[in-house]
Length: 160
Figure 1 (cartoon, one colour):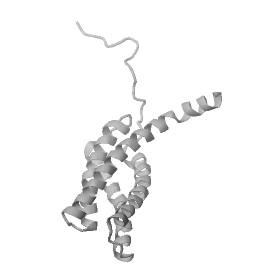
Figure 2 (cartoon, helix red, strand yellow; figure 1 turned 180 degrees about the horizontal axis):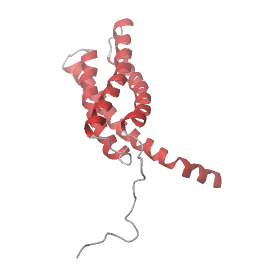
Figure 3 (tube, one colour; figure 1 turned 60 degrees about the vertical axis):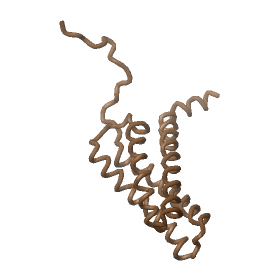
Figure 4 (cartoon, helix red, strand yellow; figure 1 turned 90 degrees about the vertical axis):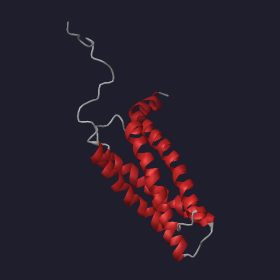
């Protein structure tokens, strides 16, 4: 039991961060999948245009959730910088989805909804691995100074 406790203590921050990242990602995935199918099947925008629209909207949600919940303990290097990098990296991750959907639709000639959604899920999975790594490396940076958890021992001095 002592080994398990030490292991948890060593990796607890990572476990909590991954759980939050996964929660935000799950909601963003539902947004992405819903909008993707709405745009493709109902609005008939086409598979690739539908993917771009759905990803743009779900990415905005994911940025806000990750910035203000998952990685809130990390240094904030400016909303504009983070937002730009976040969308740039999501644009790269979008390529995974575009490639899998394009390959399935245009190379394999599979135009049914099930094949379309499976291709999307594979692309999202590959993109998620890339996004987690890249957010930690370039967007939500480690704090250069420890972020205080509580007030200093003397409390806050009030001037009279």
